[in-house]
Structures are given as structure tokens and as C-alpha cells.
Length: 101
View 1 (spheres, rainbow, N blue to C red):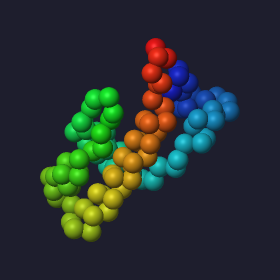
View 2 (cartoon, helix red, strand yellow; view 1 turned 135 degrees about the horizontal axis):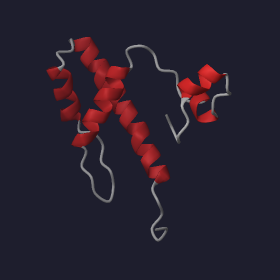
View 3 (cartoon, rainbow, N blue to C red; view 1 turned 120 degrees about the vertical axis):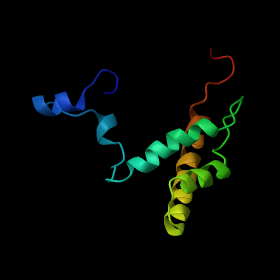
């Protein structure tokens, strides 16, 4: 549900789906591990006036705890870092301007 709109309810009632849902990236089965890891790892950021990136050491440790093999670990690190770069870019673009309280 987003903004009080239920996708499941709309589908059952045959109502048109909102643009924000139709424009969202496709999620492939198995992607949830990256999404859950990204939000877990986001708690390791340094926060202040500027939001810092997820530390590489945290990503690496997460992969170790999950016991990913070498190939998956390297892929996991790359995916999380790309997700983080996009997130940080989005944060920079959407940061309220000073004096716009």
C-alpha cells in the first residue's frame, strides 16, 4: 500500500493501477535478499549533515555471515554498492534546500 492505495484491492476490483506502481522496476524472484540486505546495511551508514555510503567492510561482513561463495559474494558487493550509489544520488537530489523548512 502506498498513499492509502492498495494494489491488491485495485486488481480485484478491476481498477486502473497508479503510475507509481506501473513505473516501478520489475522485481525478479530472489531480489528480496538484496533489498533486505540493503536496508539492514543502511543502518551502518555514518549520518550527519550528509548521508554517508554503506561501508564496504559492512557489506563484506554481511556476505561472510550469509556464507556466500566467492562468486556470489563479489556479485553481492557490486549490487549493494550500485544500489547505494543510486540511493545516495536520490538523497542528494531530494534533499530539502536550506531555509525551506
